[in-house]
Image (cartoon, rainbow, N blue to C red; front, side, top):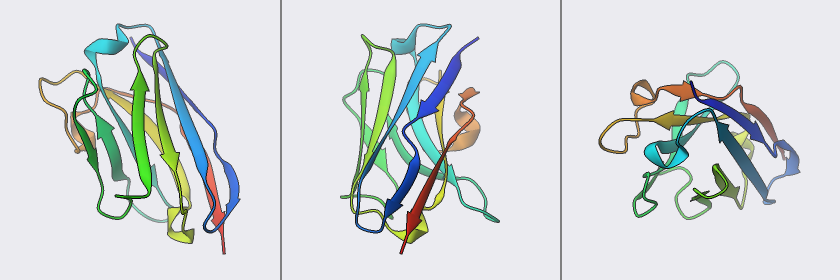
Length: 124
């Protein structure tokens, strides 16, 4: 069983930056693709970014491409999401997730383990 714990959320002004982190335990971290998803109040969960287990492939939602960067450190069992130029539309609970599938995916249904989430509020 893999445990995921997110951190780094908070309140930030529009245009500012935050860096989210997710620490994994209970499994071999390098075996998993990792993703970030978010869920705004009253809306469904949506894909944000993903990175393959060997770190050579990344995917981003069109709404965050060019502003967000996903990275991982397999030696530290962590995946991070650097969020720059934040917009009020980015207000949401952000979740990290682990995927043991053969190929990295942008679909939440392909992920096997989920963290509890960390709140991000972007004020205008």
